[in-house]
Amino acid sequence: MRSTLIIVLMFVLALGAGVVAGKLSARVSQSPATTDHPAASLTKALDLSNDQNAQMKHIWEHVRDVAHRCARERNSLKQEHEDKVVALLNDTQRAQYEQINKATNAESDAIDLAEKQAFDDAVKKTRGMLNDQQRLVYDQILKDRVGDSLSGIDSAGHGASGNSASQPAR
Image 1 (cartoon, rainbow, N blue to C red):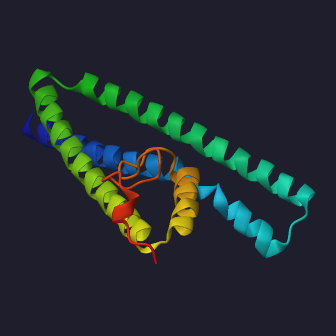
Image 2: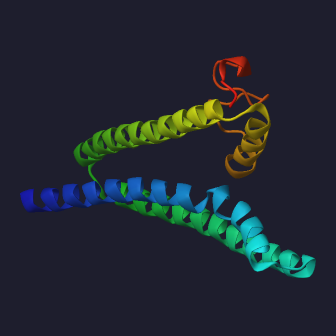
């Protein structure tokens, strides 16, 4: 009985690690930055015609769509797997699993927050070194690549303070 419990707990720990890894890989595969502007730089570097550029866009939009679909399917499969594993556990094991899962999620959230904070700080520092015109271009690039999810940028493209005057122009 004890060896069974140890095996189940080890499996649950491995599953928890897989959930964290899955969350990270899903974020990477869903990043819009992977397909938006590299095509533009390829267009310039390869001197593509308008027709070739349209073909390139079609090819890579398909890849993006497949990556998003695969990420959704992967998440669904992991959830089904987790539900089946939890169904195997007795009440005591299920409670232990929930505690492990809760701790893993808290650690994952802390990692996500640290990553987001580093990104937001880099955006603020970058904006601070740019002149007004550069800042407008940079804000558009951020919007195209990251979307409107930047906590450090308001709708006018200002930093968290909301005051572009506090940003030195160079």
